[in-house]
Length: 126
Image (cartoon, rainbow, N blue to C red; front, side, top):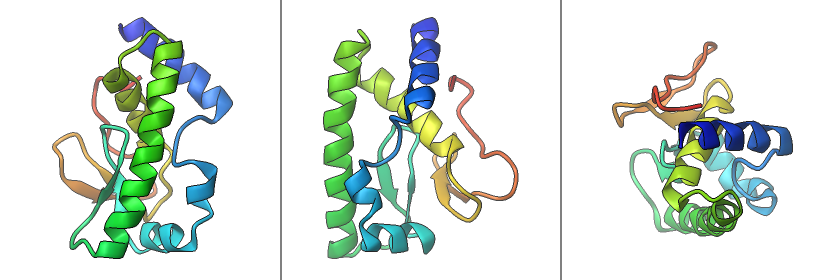
């Protein structure tokens, strides 16, 4: 399994298949929530709400996560991986791509703000 996840990770990096769908990334409300630290990348490959959730923030996060899950399911099947394996590897890559100032979920489950250095990642990450 580890070898297939590493193969997938390399392919995903090369093809830029990680992160929210392009349409969601262009959503100004999503961009503002990300920049303000209201949302962050989770280890399971999905977007999470950091702190208090509003109905608008929940709508944005749910929409992005529904789209991610659909992409993960399709790609997992093509890669002969489980949805959970694909989503986890995607989460590892999304966390590694966060920019300084953005929020992400650390291996202990807490929310961290990305600094200038590399983010803390699960040791199982490729």
